[in-house]
Image (cartoon, rainbow over all chains, first blue to last red; front, side, top):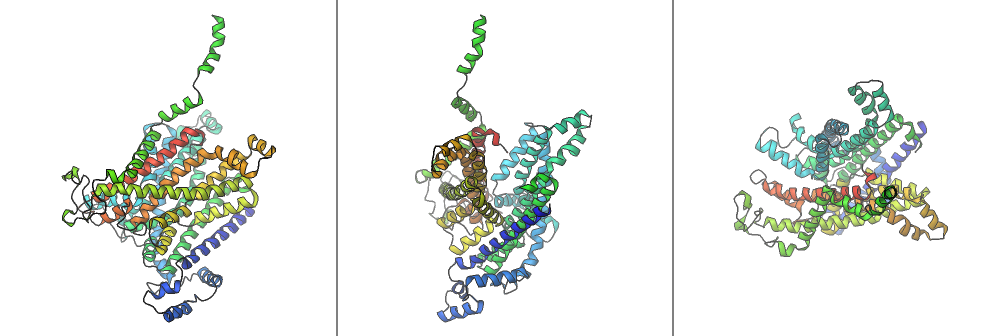
Length: 305
Length: 300
C-alpha cells in the first residue's frame, strides 16, 4: 500500500508542477505582458519601467521559479485590478465555492444513487426509464440555461427563492441543483451498472439462498460493493465541479472563486487568473489522489496498476 | 419426412438474417438513434441552406420592431419567433446560429480527434515510455479546469470563431486519448495484428490497416460525444461574453443577450436555449445509439 501511495503522490506533484507551468505561461501568451499592463497610451519608456518594476526583463524560467516559490508559500502576487494580494482576494471567495461544491455533490449523490439503485433493481421499468431520461437530459442541458429557467420559474414567477446573491442558505438552493445536476448523470449510470453487475453475482445468490431479506441483500450485500467506484467517481466529479462553478456562479451572481475568475478574466487581471487556475487544478489533483488511494485501500487489486 | 427434419436447422442457418440485415434491424429498432440522426441531419440541412431558409437578414436591425413577440404569443407571421432587443429577426438568427454551433462542434471535434487519437493509439501500440508520457499528459489535461482555461485563453487572444475553435480543439482531446489507448491495447494482442507483423508489414501499415479499422467504431462514438461537448462549451463561453463576439448569431450569445429582458420576455432566453438543448441531446443520442448498434458490449 505505501509504495502505491508514494508513487501516486509523486505523480500528483509532477502533474501539479506541469499545470503550474502552463498556468504561468499564460502571462506570455498575449505577447508582451509589460505593454499590456502599461496600457495603450503608454510610451516606450513607460513600458520599460513597467517591465523592470514587475521583473519581466528576466529569463522566463527565473520568473517561473520565483512565482512558484512564492505560490508554494501562499503568495500569488498583487491583483492588477484590485491592487490587493491575490491570496486574500481568493481566500474570501473560496468558502462560497467550497460550500456550493459540497452542496452540489451531496445533492448529486442523494438523487443519483437511489435512482441508480432503483433502476438496477427493476431494469426497463418506469423508474429505469425516468432515470435514463434524467441522465440523458442532464448531459445535454446547458447549465447556464437551466439556471436561468430555474430563476424564471422559482424566483420570478413563483417568488419562492431569491434570484441571486449568497446571503442566506436559500440563495444556495438553485445553484446547488444546477451544479449537482451536472454531476448526476455519470454517478447514476455508474451506480446502475455497478448494481446490475453485483446483483448477478454468486454471492448475492448465496445471500438470497441463505434466506436473507430482500432489503438486507440490497443494502448490506449489493450496494456496499457497488458503491466503491461511485465514491471515487464522486471525488473526481467534485474536482470537476469546482472548476465548473464559474458558469453557475456567474448565472446566480454568487460571489465565489468562480465568479472572481470570470471577473478577473474579463479585466485581464492575470495574477488572479493564474492563481485560480492553479488552485482549481490543485483541488482536482487532491481529490483524484484521494480517490485513487481510497480505491486501492478498498480493493487491493488496484494497487498493482 | 425425417430427412427434412434433419435439414431444417441447416436451412435455418442458411436462410437466417445476414450480418447486414441484423445491423439494419438494430438500427431501425433503435428509436434514440433514429431521433438523434434525424434531428442532426435536419439541423445540418438548415445550417447549409440558411441563406434560403432564413426569412430575414440575421444582422438587420430595426429599432421600430424591437422585441416583437413570437407568433404563438400573439405576434405575426412576419417574425414567426419574434425579434430581439435590436429588432433582429429571431428565427433568422437561430437558423444562422446553427451554422456557428455545428461548425465549431465539428471542427473542434476533428482537431481534438486527430490529437487524441494519435496520442492514444501511440500509447496503446508502443506502450512503455510512450505510454507513460501520454498517460501523464492526459493527467495534466484532466487537472486543468476546461472552462477557466478556455475563457482565459480566448480573452487573451480575442474572441473570434477561429480562436474559439482552436482553443476547444486543443483542450478536448483527453477522452479521445483515453478511449483510443484502451481500444488499441485490446486490439494490439489479436492474432491478425501478429500475422501482419509476421509477414513484415511496417508499423504505420499495421496501425493504419489493422488497428484503426478495428477501433473506428469507438472513435466515431467519441467524435459525436466530443462534438456535443464542444457545442455546449462554445455556448457557455459565448454566454459569459468571452466566446464568439456579437453580432455573430451564436445560441449562447442569444441567451446572454436575452437574459436582461428575461423578466418580461422569457422566450428570448427559452427559445435559443431549447434549440441548443435539442441539438446536443440529438448528437448524444446519436453517439449512444451508434455504440449500441456497432458494439453493444461496450454499453456503460
